Length: 127
Image (tube, rainbow, N blue to C red; front, side):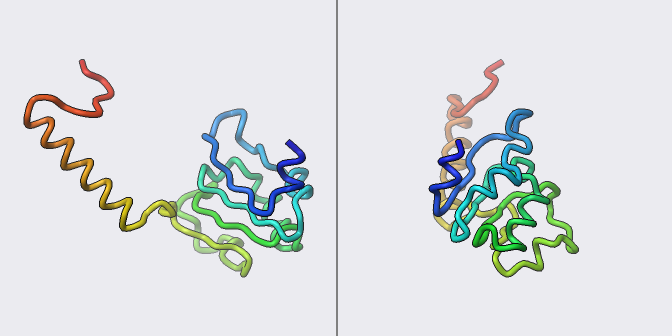
């Protein structure tokens, strides 16, 4: 676990938010990171201790962060993250590329056609 933080140049978080993962990344883990390292979180905001992340970013403990998720969404207008130059913030839409949107549209159309033909696709609860 420690080696992951010590050796990573870019650490990208991809885990679901559970009781176990809530607050998983604390001041301790962030202090292990290189001063040149970047942290990326596209999972869920509460996985990272926000006050520890703010401290790490403000003091130069890590080089920067890219965040697509937050403890509170949408991010409040007075959030201190908005004042930092070493943070890239996206509004929980980091996945939203032209290709992704086209894929969503194509899948939606295929699902409607299949349903109209009497053989629905991607059904979670058949009953």
